Length: 311
Image (cartoon, rainbow, N blue to C red; front, top):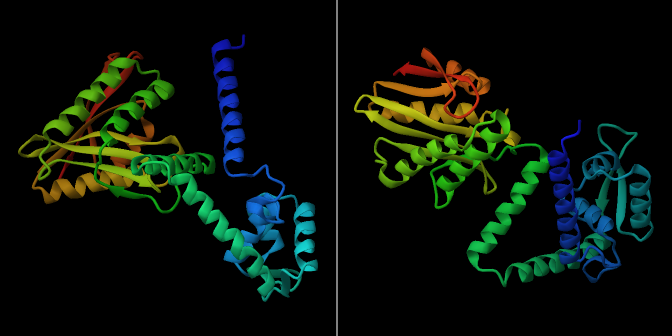
């Protein structure tokens, strides 16, 4: 029997995406006959952009990367050639292919498009205060990352900033509810751990790392003091779209390196048997399972596990 609640939620999301698309195309002027007060359509301007910034592309590569129908792209390129904007040269590797380059006239035609686009975006950002501009860019990066299916090669680790700890709590609550059926008690536990770190952590012996790409948060981990000799790994998280990129392994490695430098003799952590990927990371890093015990403190019946690593 169909789940009406799930179907309704999906319909709401579809409507929201379509609404955003309509709004954004109006904001950037994509519905105008000529983009940026030019004689070029949106698609033609996009092709010009690629040719201006990546001379030597082949039509095959260009069409594949932009997702343009080959026949449609061929007509665009033929039009550019007829207008003296584009020239073709035999490819040095595959003589059956031609590389594409803008002529001097093509570069001259693209230049005002680039200037107008820059000015339009500047005008779009100008009314917004600095924090709102940063939030807008972060949201756009988030959309890009999600639709591309994961983190891009430029992800990095950094220390926490304002708002990061709240994000850690929110993402733990949402992801564990969606993926494992955990209830609000788990989010309360995360909030207590994260709040205590925020209120009283000692940076000499405790740390938090945030993984991000282009301003988009992708993961987190905390290392906290259990006693003078023992550090504890807490709240390891990697966003679903960023998994498989080595972020979790790097976060755990940072914890181990810092713990050694801070003079700890051992590290511990508590996890659950259903977190298979995290358990794999801990095993690969040298942690060993010490004890386990069934529980249902977050709703489902699962097995809690204590792990340790001697430094």
